Length: 480
Image 1 (cartoon, rainbow, N blue to C red):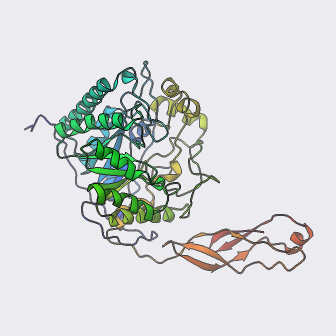
Image 2 (image 1 turned 90 degrees about the vertical axis):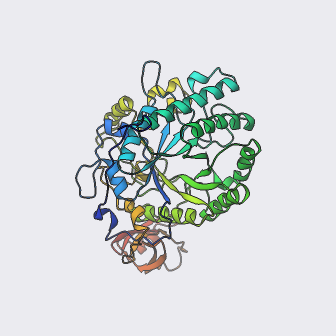
Image 3 (image 1 turned 180 degrees about the vertical axis):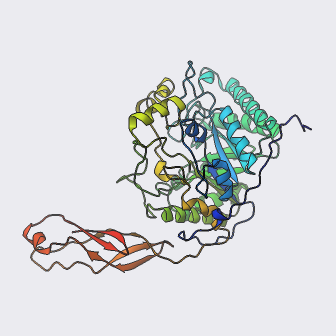
């Protein structure tokens, strides 16, 4: 029997003991509410699977990734929705080619395994972020009132489709990282007007769903201003969401201060809509990564699986300390390489299935960015799955924070050592080096230098040298 004209999705219970235990991952227990959001944005997953990517479960067998995510403690899936990410000939722009049909497929699989869906409307045909908020092709010539009506209808039709399919939509996001821009508009009166049309559609179709707005750069101190604009224009919404990438977005203490300020002033719930951290510096898909060697970014944790886990635990703990913190979404934990043979092989897949961040076809819409720099995944080294599709131990964090996993604390990474010497004096190498431990504390450990040639360094004159060693079974580097 059908209810309300909605399809019924047969739900499956998930309980895998293997996803709740780890012999190697140190995780401290957090005091989280039962409904704390432990979310994942896997918007690219359909395009990845179409490109031949296979995902595996904790038993090593091929498995629906949504089942693995649910078993690992994920309770919410976020999916971006673009209006029309295709050329007039049907060629996808890439980045998952995330139209409403992809959202339906992802939503069905999420609902099947008991996870709610956050629908992230970008109100663009391709990527929307603080640097660009492009208007959809079909709305390009519209004045603000007509554009508002089109946005309302698009939102309403999309949500109606999701509702009819029986998908459990728990939250809807009005725009993506809308730092003073959205859908081609750059004035707050117009931005708020468009958001109000989206909000109206959500309340009509999914009155129980939470409505979220989303901003980036908490370190800028602009959140109070953004919230005051939305309040001034009387926007009806529930959640003020922030991106938080620790490389660029300041401290967690500042994040708490910024979001608690929104709650104290306007009573809004808050959350982190996007976060991630690298577990390796290596690239696996022949396309450069956002986080790699060098670069102007903060590295508060080692680029290890444990470092990635510690970053996620700290972020969840920070949100749980907020006055009305709802939870955290990890951004694209499944966006791994589509192949490990060559750039050329991967490029064919990125182009055909949209499994790279952008295809060459995107130049029709975004000639100055995606059209020039199209390619593969820039975040494969920040995934919670390895390049072979098997889950990393860090994915278990979403379960383990409930109980804690206090395994023996060991060195996780050896910090580089830098020393200067007077060439005419004694050169004495250190007997100990600093190590970052699995609980993110710091200790000194014994080191053995393997290729230290003191006489050669003294004879070489003023220069820079690298000495290699081992400490606790790991590589140690001394820069002299």
